[in-house]
Amino acid sequence: MTETSIPAKKSFYQRYTSSAIALMLLASFLFAAMTLLAKQLSSRFEAVELVFFRNVIGVISILISLRQKPMQQPGGKPLLLIFRGVVGTASLYMLFYSVRTLSLGTASAYQYTYPIFLSILSFLFFGEKLNRREWTAIGLGFLGILFIFRPDVTMPLRWHLIGLSCALLTAISYLAIRGLNRYYDTRAIVLSFMLSGLILPALSMSIGSMLPDVSHWLIGRFVWPKGWEWVVLLVMGLAALLAQLCMTRSLSMDKAGRISAVGYSNIVFSLLFGSMLGDPWPSFLMIVGILLIISGGVLIAWKKKTAENPS
Image (cartoon, rainbow, N blue to C red; front, side, top):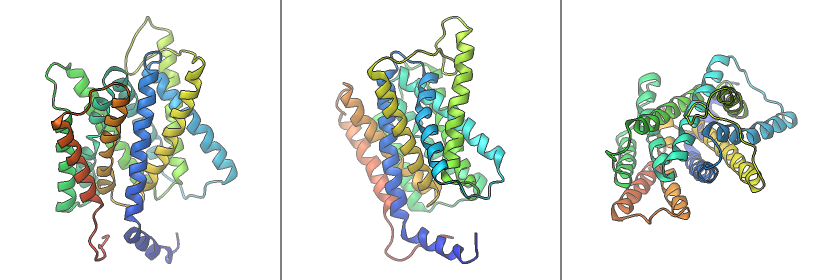
């Protein structure tokens, strides 16, 4: 990176924050669509197999892209790159297992508590400061989730733990992205995640084939898709790839806490998709929660007319 490129990056930051927000909104929509398709397939496929197929299309697409345009990057952080892939895959295991066993909206709601963890971890490990307006927006988003999905005391403790662990691992993997963006091409970061999403599920299914019938978030058996299932798996993989690219790019353009808070919009998309699957229409409290989430997103997106100091 040349010295003359540094001011240009600051100018880009000041001018295109709204573009980063738009990319995160698109990523949220595509991630919700991915979980919708995974839910439809979950009656026949274990979570680990869905993770495997979710990443096949992405790996092929990125390898084709690399052949057409090789990466130009300094590199130098291979362990962090591998760590991002492994942690991201573990969070995906938990998400797909939750989608398989819970309603679509509930599973997504658990995952999208991750901005709370991300903001705290960003402060602890990166010293990233969020102003009062940004903290308020995050709080509104989380409060909206509580209105939509109030704690169910009859739900087994393990579901709470899996949901919260998914959110925590998601936050950690997003922090790793922030650390990798200075060293690697976006495609390299996404590829590390998707390769892990092939290798680890393959190991999980190999172990599962040697064990008696078992249904676990970490272990499963391979089942050959039939007919239309191939098409749905293809679309799920494409949605995941596009969502990953949009999310990774958006996080490289602005503060992790600011952009990740926009990810609360996934809850709204999931509610809409859930209604397509036959979920009841939102109650009054759920509507209040949706409005709180939207308010938080608008508050995050709002910028003063005067230029904001990125430092």
